[in-house]
Amino acid sequence: MGKKQKLRYSLKRMLSYNGAGFSNLVRDKDRIIDFIVDTLLEGGYRGMSPYSIKPKHIKYMTTKWREEKIGESQFSDAMRLVYWWVVLVGKTNILVEYKQYCLTIYCCKCEIDVEARLTNGREIYPHSKGVSNLPFWICDGCSNYVGCHHKTKTRIKPLGHIPSKELRNARKHIHILLDPIWKDGLVSRSQIYADLSKELGWSFHIALIRSIEEARNVYRVIRTMKHKYITKGVP
Image (cartoon, rainbow, N blue to C red; front, side, top):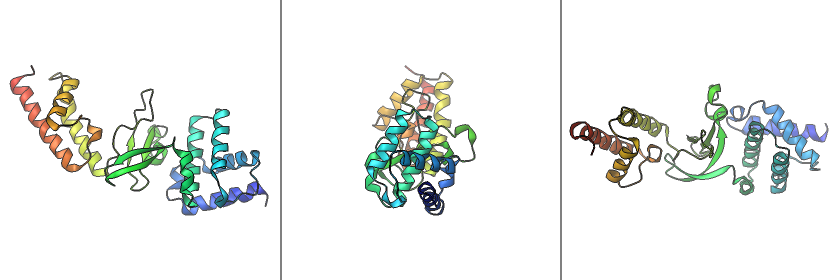
């Protein structure tokens, strides 16, 4: 078995048996594994095993791929695979090389700031093709995630804190109550958000709600404000 075949076989075996959910992480994983192995061999890194990966290997791959201007989707798939590779071999100290793919975000489930990992809809919603290329940030500690401002110039900027499943549902109910107030012209969006911020004591945004208790309080305040807008009008 040649050097390429040995490394490819080892990576495929390790990621298939140990990488929980790996099949959802990348599209056409065998092709991506070949792509990574070919890159390493081209760089002269021969005789490698999965456990011998070092920061210099990651730096070489990312630099080469950026110079070659490979597609964003291929780059993202390759980096997710490399991320799991590093985690599975217990070399998380190498993750310093991933700072551009990790971001400190507050996770409402874990109740702490976490190093969230950049991923896309293929991992979050593996059966929904319509969102497969959209960016998301995921907490690997609890598997909860948050979307991004993908329609803006900062398309990988997170929408807010990472919510739990229950909190995500609560936020949806708040949107259902809040959005018609400004969409129907009862009050402008900027004014109701300013009024809510004043009443709540913090700069209000639904994506910044951290807990179910906080969500319930916001819901109650919005209902009260809606009643005031209807009965007294907006100055």
